[in-house]
Image 1 (tube, rainbow, N blue to C red):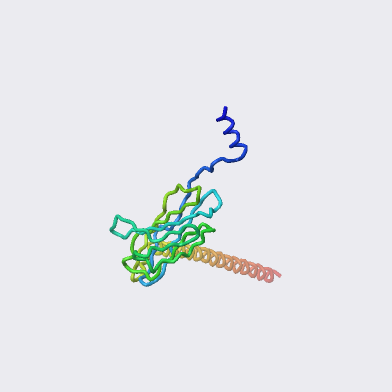
Image 2: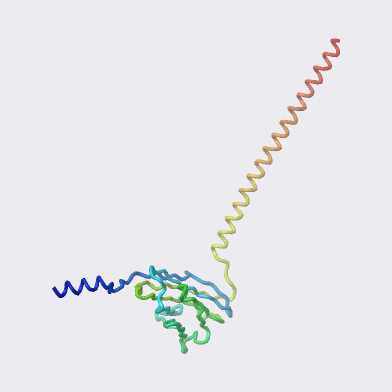
Length: 203
């Protein structure tokens, strides 16, 4: 009886614990940058709830060829904390907007040693269950021509050729039709002239 009364009071008072729902985190897939440049690594999330005051963002880094990840940044309680011992201690800046679910960071003065995988994790209590998202950073002395650019150029050339062929086709049809019309008019005029001459001879 007491149990039933307790449950009823909880329902009436609305003291029902919030259920946690899944949170989806987004980053880029792969980023390219030049040595000595700065790059923004974006991180955002989707949650069915309003952005909590307790929202958190965490970034870790795993160098290429390594199995171990190190923590490089953490945002919690409205404050940003940068690791002061790792390779990015003086080169990471928080440029996100937690109120807009943005946990992006800026990495400055890139070096070849920065090649690796950066992973972002976000929590929006009570939604704290979600799979972290990763982005791979490749640092070059000169940016390579990406396959997508080459593919786009090839498609552009092919489409340009097709348009040119269509234009030439309709231009030829127009010229041929114009020529046929001119011959028809000329022939008709010649017959009309001959008929007029024949009538004059009869008269």
